[in-house]
Length: 191
Image 1 (cartoon, rainbow, N blue to C red):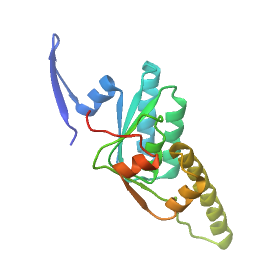
Image 2 (image 1 turned 60 degrees about the horizontal axis):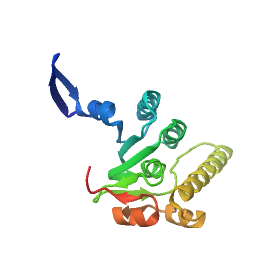
Image 3 (image 1 turned 135 degrees about the horizontal axis):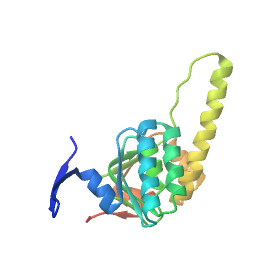
Image 4 (image 1 turned 45 degrees about the vertical axis):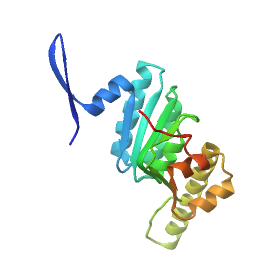
């Protein structure tokens, strides 16, 4: 259920969902749930719309268990090419591709709520078929893992070796640990 807000002005009563109000007034986008092509299209369209309206900061609030790597990469590219500083806020959980996108916020503008968690790991994939198809898929996911690790290293200030070690298995970080790790800049205590 979408939270609604009702305002009154000279033209009368105006009701809109709270996310639309936050989007229009505060330039805040909510990236919630599994990252897939549909969500990516929605988030990219919102980023591009706000970037056309103004060069002011855009805030992306993330509560996501992750999802498709290619969809996440599309959002990542939109965040980097929009011409605005993109601030990220982790609330609840930023896991997998959600953590990758959280880390991609403008350095100094990546916030995490006190009880939120971040989880990083290597990309997951599955393939079946003949041996040559499986070998190609394995090579591709290895390249994808290396790309993600390099970007995470750049975003966090960690070495590639540390990122590779920490993404080998699921690694959960509390808000404080996320700040210490460099994936977040500050614990958000007030809105």
